[in-house]
Length: 254
Image (cartoon, rainbow, N blue to C red; front, side, top):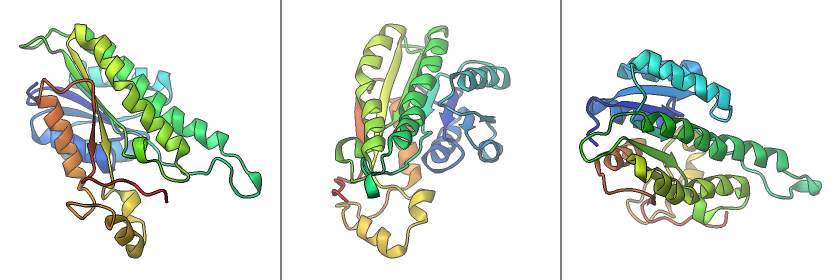
């Protein structure tokens, strides 16, 4: 699918990988709806790229439904490209100090990361099904964000890894189901990227992290994630799989 002239929705678009993706798609001619839990950040990125800012909690179905209505009203049509970047990385051990359990945090991470991605994917797919097919029969592309932790979850990441593993696992069955409608479903599993969360770490900690990355021996640039999304959108034969984008790193246990 050619990006130029398409309408795209990026969740988590107010910062980090989502903002980089919104910028990349806009630079290639898309009209981008920037959705974020932080409405001010969504509006700031949208203003920068000539898009539309939308505030919503992806884990709340009613909020997502209203967000899609706002996108159609503001940009004139249902998006043909939907990218799920919204997520949280709360870490907690299964059994912490003095026997403290983390079930509440586990539920929260699953709700935002996995269920939130599923809700957005569901509304995007239903809307795309009603669009006229493009040349080749394609109606839309959905890209969800997994994580290298899907396969290499570290201590304290049981909930996070489970949420991202769910995103990776639902990619193929969703792609198979939506194939008859000309809708592709892909997932990207990023490794260690230079996002605001990483920038907050002490330099020595960052150096230890980078030491585990074979090549390039650095943190990923968010723009490289955005480029991967753009390449997925443009390559019609990419469907139903999860791509690790990680410089060949494998996360250690801690």
